[in-house]
Image (cartoon, rainbow, N blue to C red; front, side, top):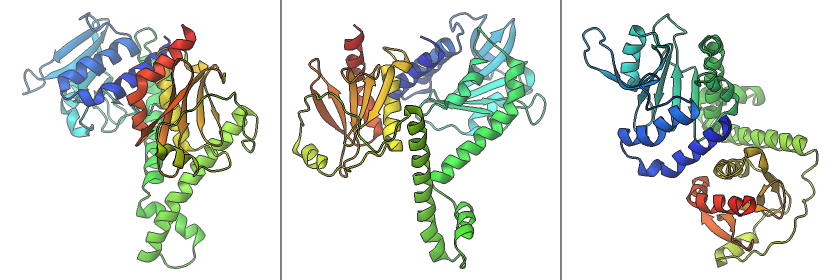
Length: 365
């Protein structure tokens, strides 16, 4: 597998096993060591490359340890501190990284819980680790624009100078993107007030604030959906105003609720952000069997199809997200007969990972 495929496979593993991993040691064994070996390419069993429980005396602090030190030519290059996967990362968790950063040759420090990896360097002051990461890798929502920079830290193409020179831009661009995402999800008063002042001439009272908080959030989501749809239209070179015809496939419905829900679907095709997010999850799971570029999608009036090789005769799954009451994931048996499975959220797709991989495997066997 290439770099992107290995990363996607690890992301699927983290999503599938996250609930079963309850301790820091389990997090290191199940998630962090595979990241160091399969993604960064270092031999976790070779002490010349990876030193677990790395110790260096720091002032009056004696015997403190950092979980891993990645070595090159006998020098520490990357320090890694781990927390358990169920614990969100906080800068307070990085106290040992701060101390070790100043007494080793390391220019890169990583704080991780196995799912989120925060990469730090010393942009603000020499030999002093920054408070803010310059790169944040979230395996539950991989930002593909960061992958070229992440690749520079791998064993085969290690390029510290290049990544340090790009770190300042990465740091601020990443922080701005995360802030924009936060504001789009839950706009704060300053964000709401900014846009309200541009479209509303009255006083910004509490009542106006409440009204426009809802309107700004709604407008933000609609804008994102429209941008996604425009990119899809450009990529496909066709309008979504007419449905794409597909070969008929038997579709037994497994519950009366599903049958009733089908009647509530929209009559025109509208690709939603939720459908695209669901597609990315199915694609990440399927990438354990085939290359990512072989996974395609087609949106229909009533469902969103995920296909192998963009072939209607090779359906992997269907996302039935247009119903007003319930979402369903459609999966296929050996005879290509579809069964719908009710899911409460996108995370429910991961519960059917084996069936998704099995569908792909049948076509490539």
